[in-house]
Image 1 (cartoon, rainbow, N blue to C red):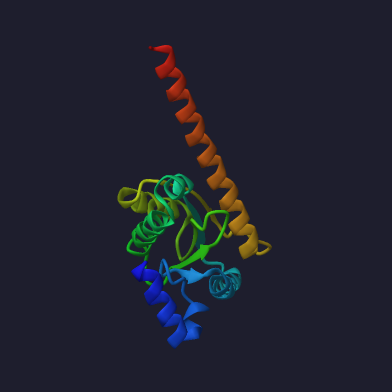
Image 2 (image 1 turned 135 degrees about the vertical axis):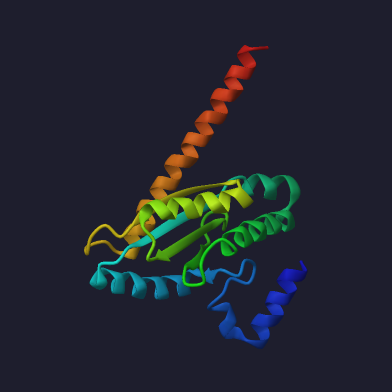
Length: 178
């Protein structure tokens, strides 16, 4: 609650702040992320450098909100965002996309090869294990930021479905062993 009051007060004093940074998490707002990330992607298309994108989605936020309330959900999201922001470089971009639950973060990683993007995700998972992710990179000059986000989101959902299937299989096995 105090974080929301601080954010509201900061927004009152500096309304431009709310257009740049998500007050709950410290990540860029989706609008600002898109503006900056599109410029970077377009520059990397010309320079033909490596650039990767990670799509991160917290697992279990809806359950936390339903069982413990939205204040607990806010703390969950803050913990997730801290794990992200402390494990990326200063030149990496982190944006929060307000999806169904507001638990989606997209990272643009300039100069990072796709294999190294996976290492970034795993480093974050060491601190905050409850999330699914998808990684992609700029494949060719026809790629756009939107296409990269959509591709990484699709890969994230594949991982999320695999986790759900593993959970169901564990539950079935436990029931059969009773």
